[in-house]
Image 1 (cartoon, helix red, strand yellow):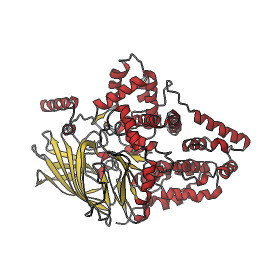
Image 2: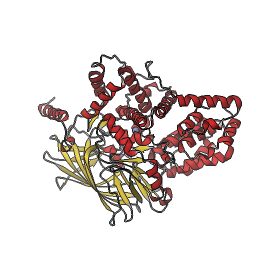
Image 3: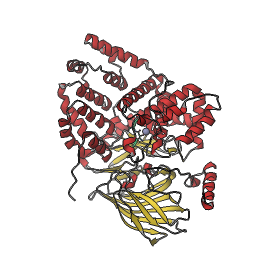
Image 4: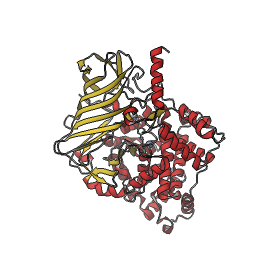
Length: 623
Ligand code: BES
Ligand code: ZN
């Protein structure tokens, strides 16, 4: 290593180990090789972004300027990631400078290489998004709840931010940001930043995000929505027709934040709000800092699906504070978050509810292991996503095997020690990124060796499948559900007394565990007794529809219900589960017919997954 570089690393090392104030956070830095960004941050990296952009619903284009404060380690160029963007001009320290866009890779997009000088402190890029953008979904009024105004939202994770902002799109590179966003009058804009609580006349909104975050957490939503507080630091944004319902559904948010703080230390982001988006939002939730983005499918009317909020909140520690260094370390984000989610749910609603959720995760894990039995390497916690789109390689192993690993560890050392360890882990690594290897070292030193516990960490992380020493997960409630199901299979009768207080988790468990031999007639009997086809709980709908497809059930007009669901809901997990069931049961022709109608409603993330699943080739729009 040459001397200047060695000094550079030394300085970084010192910075990393110092206690951090807000100003210092952004310089913290120790970069590992990673396959999903063109940036070479060892040479030059961005540390602050200022956006001045206009959101135009007519042309469906975002355009404007992005100005970056940079740190230059004696380099003559800085490389950013750019995908499907039109770069108009670039300046360095205020003077026009050369730039070039490299070859377009289907997954990664293009490296945007900008000429800089040793003393370049600031660069500015004038740019536009294009029709091909993958992060943005532009919605027509009919695709919203209120049906009167258009809507726009972004989805950055994993590598989509580069399709709406030229950026160093690596989870290791953290920046603070500010933004001026001009939207049409009458609409409101919110970001993963300090947010307005009311609309303003001009449609010009200013945002500030002081805490340094990776690019995948920069987010924007524009539409006609309103804010309602739940507590001083928590609240919800939703379209008017849903606002009260949403506030009711999420009324435990403050309790969740305090329970989380009691477990693993202070909430670092000041405000915790949730915005409920139109139904095409491709995920259940997305942990954009200060403002979680959520699907309306969790508004069940009975708070039964709010573990999603606990999950996204938990990311405020695991993910947003301590961030996976590369997408290969994704389990550090999601496994920890599922573990933390369960602990928040247990703290608020008790062990019975948490046990049910844990057993659902266990069953999801078994299903995923079965799906991946031909490619066992995909069942390792530490992934190898080089050459792959991280979005395709990220399955529920990170979530459910990650959870089981941490739960097993908890049981090995005892909850008290495990909690103290996690609290310290988040504190020591706040606002920095973590590799799997670094975590293992930290775990060995601070938990296992300290307590003289031997543990097969290597096997859990680097071997396929699930080691033998897994925690045993059980739920008394689910045992009863299984008995009720067996009883129904034997007698053909369902005792309504038993099921009358069932939560949606119990219903889902009941439906998911139908035996292979279940007949369409048996499903009809159940439907007659319980009217499951007309359930308004999205999770129950999803599993019931899946079983209707598996068992060839066509009662109560269920086929058109399934079609309506697929057309109106774009949550990828739901949509994919149902289309997979069509495929598994040789009903591809119907699936493709529905998909032609539903695809225009989907965000690119969902559309891509279903294109691949059904072998659908989108016809290129004529320009
Ligand atoms: N961060 C994820 C969503 C995500 C993962 C987006 C990978 C893009 C790439 C989010 O926190 C999440 O896990 N959402 C789940 C919620 C569930 C586990 C409660 C979802 O959307 O279903
Ligand atoms: Zn998550």
